[in-house]
Structures are given as C-alpha cells and as structure tokens.
Length: 276
Image (cartoon, rainbow, N blue to C red; front, side):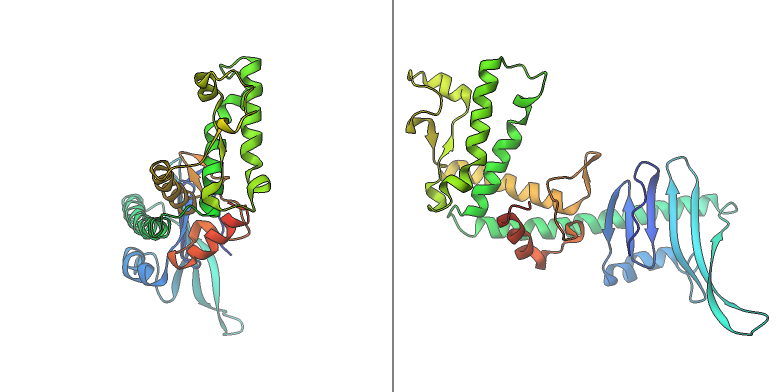
C-alpha cells in the first residue's frame, strides 16, 4: 500500500516498490513504462540493483535525506538467503543525493504534466462534443455559483444583514435545483439571479418572488462554464492539493489522484451521484 509522507516535512518521497513519487505533498503513481524508461536510469545501478534494491528515498525540507534499501543476504547459521531491510548511509554522497533529487523531480514534473494534459484533453472532448446542456453540467455550474458566493457568508463579509439574508436565499435556491427541477430537461433549468442583479432590475418585487428573477443559461454563458468545468476537474483530479491547500472538492471512495483518461466515465458517474 502506498505511504504518503507528510508534505509539511518532505520535498520528495519516492517509494520504489509502489512506484509512487510525492513532491511537496502531490503524489503520483508512475506507470510501469514511464518508470522503466525514465526513473530506473536515475536509480540504477548506484541506488538500486538486482541484489541491493531501493525501497524508499526521502528528502526532507530541513536538508536531510533518508534511504531505505533491502539486500539479498545469506544467514551465516542456516545458509539460507533472504531479503533484509536496512537504512543506507547517505553521508558520503551529498552531491549525488542532490543530483538524484533534482533528476527525479524533473521526471515527476514531466510525467504529471503529460498525464494531466491527457486528462484535460479527454475532459474537454467530452464536454465539447455536444452543445446540449445535460444534468451533469447543470450540477457543476450550480456548484461553481455556490463556490463563487461563499464569501458572502463569512463573518467579515462586506455586506449588511439584509443583503446577507438575500444571499442566503440565493444559495438555498441553488442547492434546491436538483430537487425542485430534477424532472425537467437540463436546458430548461432556471437559476436565481444574484442580489446585486435583482437590485439593478428595480422591478419593485420582493427578491426571488417573480419568475423574472430567474434565468436559463444561454449557450454563450455555458461555453464559459464549460472551460471552467474542464480546468477544475483536471486540476482537482490531478493533484492532492492546490496552492498548498488540500483538495476537498474531489472526495470519493475512488483514488482519483491517479485517475487516468480511460476512467473518465467513472468520474462523470461520481459527478452525477453528487460525490464531486
């Protein structure tokens, strides 16, 4: 099982058995072909060999490093051979350690960018292959609108009590969209206008009391959301944190941080179930 090192302490955590590399908290499981072609040449034969195998390599933020290896060793009493784990002394190799760290991080970055670009292209293809607004897209757009209005509910938000109450009503209506409109076509779903847009309307009617306070999403607006959907999913699935913050938007029984393009249908199914 993959062990994730604490990102608060480590710059690099490499597990050679699981073929996982974690760089400053972002973990990737490397596929066999890329590992063989790009990671093995960095490790072999100095750090990893047939009879003295690398288990893990850790470089800490405090400048220290650790390497565990396993050696095929003969028991002098029984004569039997077995693999024995031990901590390898890195003190004679400061320059070599810095070199292996830099080279692994370079290849990890290359792998991550390639994987996420493939995923983003696949997501973009899915969301652009039809102009029809389906319920998966409606739910994601609803989530974006909620995220964009989160600031209004903070204790120090620059809104008065009356305005804050209207924002609460706005957010309540957004959350209720699947329950209240789930039986109609996705392109007929109406979204509430924000309190500032209602104020600018100045129709003399209470907020969200009239059908004119709701709107359907035109294609031009949907196109902008489509780009945001792709970028958001690609970033969330491709990393365990964004800008140093844990990703909580992708939370499911699946290991989405290593999801590959051929599992896109699984991702979309999780969206439909409300798990993303």
